[in-house]
Length: 581
Image (tube, rainbow, N blue to C red; front, side, top):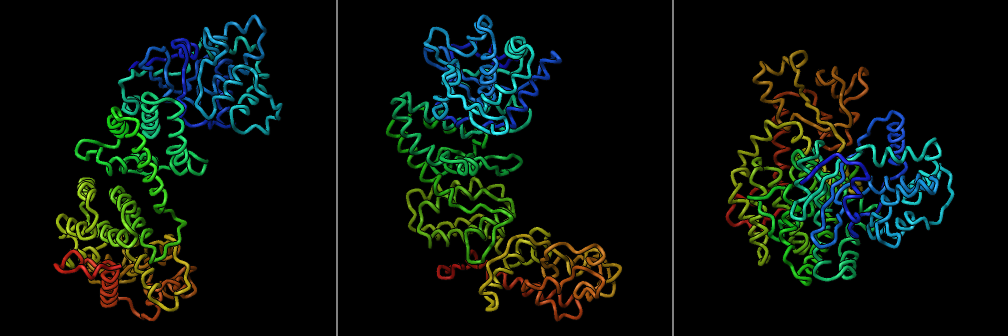
């Protein structure tokens, strides 16, 4: 790797031409970015101080032609070159010759120095060659796209008194970029991670896509590769803005945010057996795929793309958990993914994707129920990745007894967590987040069972957790609890907790029971006001909240817990007929 501060002139002069691979995304910068770029450069020229625009990562072609692929920085380089073209058109003829090499490749019939991606190549070429159809738009109407970008800069360049000096400064006199040269054998993602101070990793998806279709071009031809790209990649990952937004949306994995596309590709790599959980991490994702495809034949790569597309379509059908979802108890997939979301567990995603792709719905539902209880009850998560990889590997060629196999594997590794004593110890001294999740689904379960709630449309996960006997109990609850130790024993039982829309003010949180229940004209919020939930309705006729009522309600909630999550599945020897929901 070679990284050096460079002017635009240095970047384009070191190669015969620069190429944006045909399968890279279209130009997406908009007016906001154009305005920022021009304002920064204008200020830089006026002050005669350099302004850093970012890094450009180039990868030298391994063949005989002297050119480089633009791996990262396509958007800023494209925008910068269009600004140059807009300024170039304002120069006198004798001045233009100094900037021709920045726009046009030497010894060609007016070919652009930058060969753009397939989607934008035609219009970009027309812009650089000056044969575009100018719209003569008003600046207010310029929003996006390559032509709008050109028109915007044509308007803004009128602000510059000496365009020739402006161009000299921004193209040659200023080292505006950090140019990173990669050799053909170097891994783009690892290099990018090591130089990027922001900690945001280069998207492995684009690197994998580039490697896939670069390989396909080399072993077939560009037309064949284009056809496969359209059918099995663009149509799945890039066919419209909504699709792009989905795959670009971020998920937090550990301490790092990764895009949906990277999370999917990791799951897919694990499913097909090329990702070793003992050796690889997410930062190795691109190199894992590149190693896998480097010796594949044309037919093997096409089969690979077909399978990739099938799994990607299945992945898109998995629930996406947000605050606005209306949850219903019987929507089992939403329930599973909501539990994973609340407990911060996504290690089971590859296995869930594999099961959804390969099982009939009834079998998939039963298997997901086993994993749901594991997410909920098992607190040792460090070996989940290995556990999931082993199950997938063993199920690849035999899905006949999937439910039984998964159940036995869970029993083998985690049976102690399903013991009633373990679960009841947890529910009798439970943390707020855990209690909120459990109470939410118990409420939905009770609504399903209650005749009065048959027409309910579900609940959003918008509640706050309230301790009925408060954590600060000394002022109004000293007749209930003798000391701190006794208070803690009851306050943190799940039976002493409920869900409310909004949080009580501090005075009411610590108030006596009758005030918390009825308000007594002193408080705006109180329990009776939020009695639309069944778990709150049962409180309305309780005149005194004490240790006995806390204990009774805890037992009742634990019984409902076992009705929903039948952990006996993992404890009994002959339990095939009792499979829960």
